[in-house]
Image 1 (cartoon, helix red, strand yellow):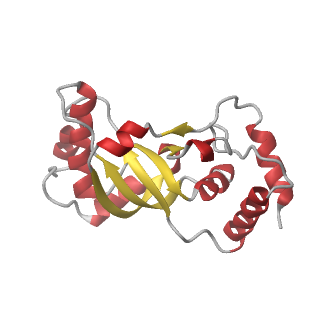
Image 2: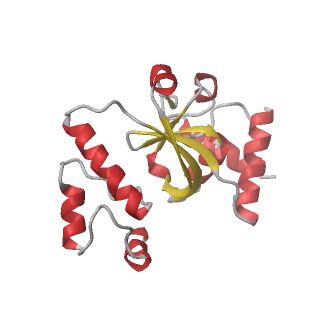
Length: 189
């Protein structure tokens, strides 16, 4: 078991003074939710967790904070070994709100993969729908939702309204019809 890797991950996180972000309870409890399904998501968009008790176990960069002699450290180390030997297969469970992911189940898996600098993770996604308004942020997000629906991609992410439509136009596509798989693969790298 790779407890030494846990120790290194913990040391790596010592520079972080902040713990993980926690999804605001009023957002979580009051806004409508839409089940999306299982998709590959960029790990850099996984920014927090849904419970404050779990947030204290990780730094802002997802490095573990608990001592090496804890059950948490043992489980983290086993997940590390599993990832090295065969890969972590079970998707995490997340809530997506405004293009950011908050973990419901699988915090340690995220931590291990972030420590290993993996680019992405499989996730079972439930989207929390924001309240519609005329702000630029909501306009861009609603356009992103149209893009995501036809591509199943979370990248690229733009900040200027009209950018997704412009991208679709440049590629001879639209935001109403599923895009060809070969085109989608070019975005996945």
